[in-house]
Length: 428
Image 1 (cartoon, rainbow, N blue to C red):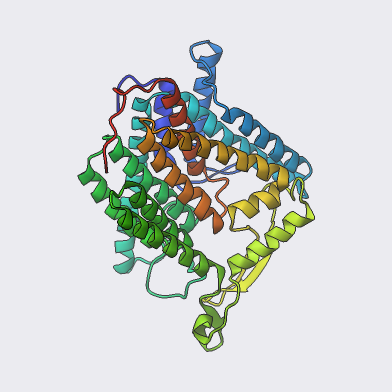
Image 2: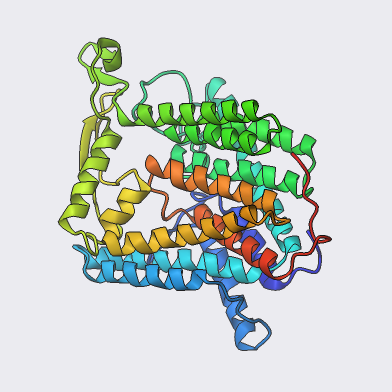
């Protein structure tokens, strides 16, 4: 890390390092469970604010502030008119925390050198997470299969049949969150190689370990890995047929993963587990039922929603392990935002995503020197936000809002200060 970094920049790097350790430990706070990263970001914000009040820092302007303000108004109205105002009020604090992530990222990541340091900090945190997860996988097969002792294990099999295999959640609450985080890590690896900030050899070794851990999350989000890979090969391949085949394969695998999340693959019976598809039976999965009921929740409160952080789905089922389960989360980012904040919140949230896509796409269409970096960040958004958002509610995940901030910071940096000598993009 460069020694010229300022105090708030060092603190922000520490925040990035601690992001993947969400449950080590969770601290009870007013706004629910508080993570180590939350405390670090709070200190970072206080330091930046003090320096700004002392006129030693200035606010970096971004059009994103308008869209953040619109979304802030939407979630505030949703909380006020919530079916459970007290519960939504607590979540509202968490929403403004997410907005602070974007604001601080834009104002702290003001150069390519700082962005380089941010990605290195990301790899430090994710590298530790991956190594500990690999150790946990090995420990499982050596007999340590108690989630209370082997902390990277997910305690249940979910919609999968029980067996002698581990499901890895790392230090997140669910395997799907780990998969989402690792998807961003993979694209950041490619970005670092493209910017010549990381050697290909190191990236390949890191990437192999990442893919092993990611495979053990066993979530529908894994389809995004193939989708992202297919899009990347399509954009980089000099042979058109190779690129089209890669893109087609990526889309096909992603579609199959989404289909697998939409139907019941394994069901529990008195005789044991069965595979309905093998008997020609197609029934919607517990996720699909959560989608259906959350959309009904939206229809009941279409303008401002039912309220942030309130139950929006009602999916009851018996998992393949024989446990009775109840899902109250939409398990879909789009439906979750619709049901919780209504059309007003959804339009504001979608507008922010469109703004980021438009800014990155402009770099590509103008054949800007940051074209390769913009393409990779677009792929990250397509995978972790758009595609994985079909099977999981990720609108409140901290690492996704860091991605929003990094993308907006990259757009701002290259809009204002990039010259041909600032960056040397090479083929991966």
